[in-house]
Structures are given as C-alpha cells and as structure tokens.
Image (cartoon, rainbow, N blue to C red):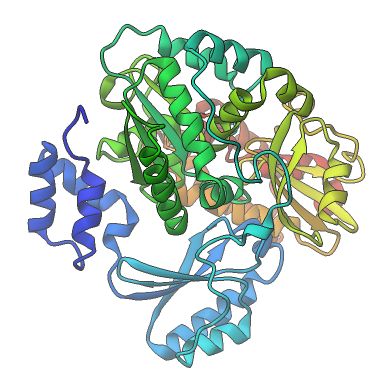
Length: 510
Ligand SMILES: Cc1cc2nc3c(=O)[nH]c(=O)nc-3n(C[C@H](O)[C@H](O)[C@H](O)COP(=O)(O)O)c2cc1C
Ligand code: SF4
C-alpha cells in the first residue's frame, strides 16, 4: 500500500463499537494524516456516521412510486408513531425487482425486507419479522448468459498490447452509463509515466432502477476481480480498490470473499487489493467524487480536466471502470474479441409491470419490444430507460427501438447502465417523476449552485404539477438551466425524465 490508512474504513471500525465519539474521529484523523477538521467534514457528509437509534425506512424508488408509495408511507408513519420509532424513507437499494422494501436501521446495523405491504408494517410494530429478508438478491433473479453463469477459469494475462487491442476489436465500452470506449481509457492510463497507478472498480450503483451490478457483485464477483486484475496488469497499476456501494452489505462480503479466494490462487500476485465500503450517497458513483471519498473527503466531483487517467486517486493515474465493464473485459480475454463481438452481451435490470422482473443478459441491439417480451410485459405504456437519470419512452411508439449504444442516443435517449422500468396504463407517470425529482434534490452534493438550487426547484414544480398547478414553460427553462449549468452528470441529467414526460406523453399532461 503506497498510501496511509483510509479514513472511512477506520470510522467504520469505530462505528462497530457504537456511535462515533470525538476521540474516534481524532484517532482516525491522526492515522490517516488528515486534519481533524477534514475528518469531521467527512463524518458530517456521509449519512451512516449520523445513525443513532432505531429507524424504520421505506425504500423510495420509481416502481413503488408508481404503485402504493403514499399509502405504504402513511401506514409506516402511523405504526412507527404508535411504537415511538422514527420513520422515513431511504433511496433505492437495488430491490426494484422484489417489490416494496423496508429497511430497519438500528444504529450502524440494518436489516432489509422485501416485498412488504401494509400487513408487514403491522407485524413489524408487533415485534415480528415484517417480511422476507432481502440481504442478498436471489440468484434466480437472473437467467442464463456469459455474465450470469459460473465464470470460466481466469485467463492468462495476454500482454498489455494484446488485451487493449482485443478490447478495441470487441467494441467494448464502459457500462456504468457513459459508454466510453474501454480501450481508450486503458491506453490513456498505460501511457502515463508514473511509478504508482491505481485501478478502481466502481460498484457504487446507487441510481434507482439499476441492480445488475448488485447481482454481479453478489453472485459473480470473481469475474469482476479477474477483469480488474487484467486491467491492472495492462495499465501497469500495482493496486486495485474495489468500491462497493455502502448499503450493499451482502455484496461487500461476497466481493471480499472472492478477493481472498482469487488471491489464494495466486492470480492477484504482485497486486495490492482491497474492498472499500462506499459512502452511501448517489454522488459517490461519479468517478471523481468516488476517488475523493476513498481519500476520506466529501464526495464532491472534481473539476475536469485533469481526468482520473492523468491525476486520479492520490493524484496518481487511475483507471476507473464499472463492475460490469471489468467483467466484460475478463470475458473478452477468455472468449476472444470475435466471439464477444458476435454475442454483444449486455446486462439489463428489468422491473415494474412485467411477469418476471430480474437481471437479463441480452444482445445489444435487442429491440425494446423483444426485451419486454423476455421479461413478460403485458400492456406496457411507458418505460423509464436507463434509470432515474433516464428518459420515458412511449409504447407502442418505441417498441422497435434497438437497445444499443447508438440508436437511443440518436433520438436523445440512452440505455445508461441498462435499466428498464416498465409501467402499464394504470400507473401515474407524474408520481414517478415526482419521486425521481425528489431523489435528485436529495442527492445533489451542493458543490455548484445550478444543481443545488435547481433540483429542489424542479421537485417543487413537479409536485405542483401533480396538484394541478402546471407550468410547462418554467419546467422547460429549468431543465435547460440544469442541463447546461450543472457541474456534473447528476445535475445535468436531473430533468431528463420530467422533460421526456412533458414531450412524449401529451395525453397525461392535460
Ligand atoms: C451522479 C453520477 C453517479 C454515477 N454512478 C455510477 C455508478 O454507481 N457506477 C458506475 O459505474 N458509474 C457511475 N457513474 C459514471 C462514472 O462517473 C464513470 O463514468 C464510470 O465509473 C466509468 O466506468 P465505465 O467507463 O466502465 O462505465 C456515475 C456518474 C454520475 C454523474
Ligand atoms: S451538479 Fe449537483 S451533484 Fe454535481 S457537483 Fe453540482 S451540486 Fe454536486
């Protein structure tokens, strides 16, 4: 390890003994070399360090917003008040495919249940288990496919030039949402003349509607570590940090177990490796904010350039790639670029009004209609494509849209990380938009004012819309200001779902 111990893991250790004391923060600051004030900044920024007593939290995500969110929340508040327990909401846990979810928080510990209904809340109030435990996603939530089956034996490192050439020939792109060509980033980090370089695996996945990375980390983490090790050797990095979303505790354990197993086999020889529990906020997934959080700072995006490839973790060249991207890199090395290109695999998280919600490996270019048929959609009227930072597509108009990198983009949409949230004609799409806009307002990190002021304003306009005060011209103006003025993708994408609803669903806007 070329750096001092990291702040968040030290705070997490202290948290296991009970609520953080000033002495814990001072000791963690000393060990990390950070000023005490900086350590306190982090303690105040990351929500888990504030957790104290018992709280009952309803998981807020677009699918439940389209269904019985209001009645579940009312019921939760009622039973919690009677029991003298604090209640509230928390954002998506990657459980959209299981149904409404509930988190029971007790200090630093959490138990998660899904699906839950009003009767579950009564059981909780009576001191019983409220529903099925949902610490891990069921393995059966995914069908078959290269990424979803047991991985092949880790391939030999073919050499940097060959691996990068294969990633290029395979057409492999980043699968965390931005779809940047993988070979270019590998090449950029490899080209840096530095004694220390890092690979950081982005397993933060906090965007509502997405749960394919969660599934991969829980059920196929070895494939991801294999890809990360290949990438590290290709760029000349000596350390890999695997960043797992803070709330995905089961995934964290599985990722760490896979690390130990692969290390014991010798595959990671010569590489420092660690599993890092993420900060627990959506912004932590933005690559530069993620690096800040590993460094023990507030997870706020950095100004770019420089990009992480030049100055990333601790100022050193860093390759940041999504969990699924690295799993694909391992598959390219195992199967060869030609076989990979022929197959064009991509994971999709499909939830909402379908008979079989789950993680699907589909070929890129599968049409929306085919994807919906695979998951057993009935009379779908709308799909929120990509996730909360996505757009609503209207059916049947969009039925023939190929789900690939290019076709959605040509019409102003994107598959993003690969979420399809499906809504039939009975669902209130403005209720979904209200939830999505509340999410962005809550998750704005506050670094730039277009987003920190604009996202709550957007939420207020959408809230008013649902209650009859409709200002489409203001919504359009605000959407433009957010998109053009925000520093990072969070603020830029915040209005997309609302704007697509305004533009494509004239009949529900009357
Ligand atoms: C607000 C925000 C949240 C993000 N969250 C994630 C995330 O959870 N996982 C992820 O891989 N990429 C996320 N990204 C994209 C990353 O910044 C970055 O593009 C990605 O990790 C690069 O990996 P890839 O090229 O393999 O996709 C997010 C971006 C933004 C703006
Ligand atoms: S756009 Fe929002 S999340 Fe991004 S830096 Fe600005 S305030 Fe923070």
